[in-house]
Length: 177
Image 1 (tube, rainbow, N blue to C red):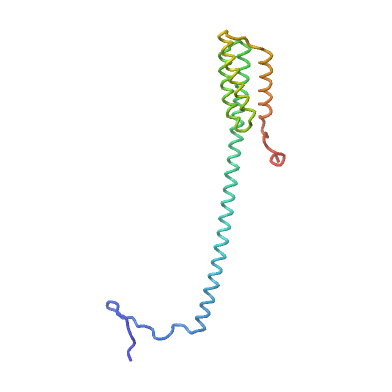
Image 2: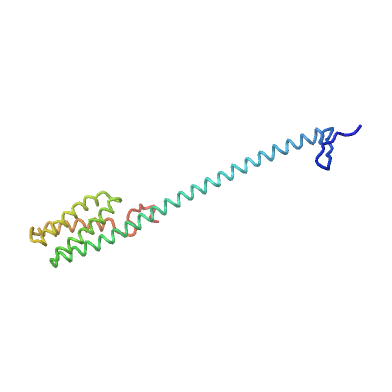
């Protein structure tokens, strides 16, 4: 009896009549497939954990960079605030009221930026705007400067700058090490 064939163009392929593998080899192949499947699953779980660990490390790195960026900005703003305050004092002492008002306005701008880090700066920014207006009025001879109030206010601002400024400001003891 002829074997059945499948015609494919010019070639004919024989159709197998019996099983390709014996029962023993089919069982071996099934067990091997199960082992490979379990090993592949374990490998996938391992890779997912590594990916998760990498994602956590990346998130921590982003947070550290963000914190460092905030500290650098705070230092920058505080350095500007210190300079503006010093210039405002110098201009007030030399009775250059318009220049003193200008620097107090600049200082108020920096204080408003620093309010993100400390609420007390927000109140100081409002007071600095008032002093800016006072200096303008003194310059136009519509008001007189109250030296005691001015000195007390400058001292408050100086203390706040001193409290906020420094290389380790905002770091707890464990972060300073």
